[in-house]
Image (tube, rainbow, N blue to C red):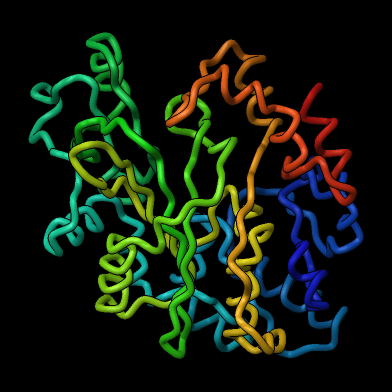
Length: 350
């Protein structure tokens, strides 16, 4: 929304429910509909598209590819949405799923000579610590799963009791520096790239809460992933997570959609959101290339939530002492401690 405001692009927001944080930001007046159910259906989307058109007078509407559940739904309904003049800025369904489904993309990377973590054939033989990853977005019972980190025999037993092991595959847990390679693959073939190093993460592999700019997009490894996506015929946004140690740079997963700490690339002047808008003719191309600067990202609300619940943050390539020694600098870059969202920042500290 900050980017849409900057580029004077008309937009509307569909609130998740009446507790949505959007109502505590400067963008509350952009809400045209508040959902009463988490389920997605085509009629709801059609109604929302109609509300947006009546407000702005436009015919074409682009739907932001924000979450995995939404994107899967949009891909299933792509033909119907096209008839409604709704733009879905995603790769085709087969290509999208070959990247987003963890087992499929791991296989693609392995076949392309890219380094991936070692795998174990069955749960019982996996060496601790390891990661249980869902093979596909939806399991046999129709439920969606997240990766599960397993560090002890007790956790292995708990996993076996709670999950259908056939829905998962098992990889070694790779220690090391946490890197995001960031891309926008334009419809005209142009590739925009950037990268960040993640320094602090919530437990169990959840949200990144502190990160900084990096230069991995200038290394050969970035060109290798670019070549892979081009070969797949991919277009749009995608993030590749790597773990780097003395043995190499391991692919952990890829997300062909919006990703959490996106404020970092916006602040760095490498605005992938603007690339997307330009690609679909929603704002004018800049007369010059974006200047690739450096930026810092912090989500203090995520840190506070973890500590309040007696959780342990994961520190990567930094120590808690060094991180907190510069905490006043980190706080000046908080994603919500800004004039348009200050109420969200204070609410998260309650």
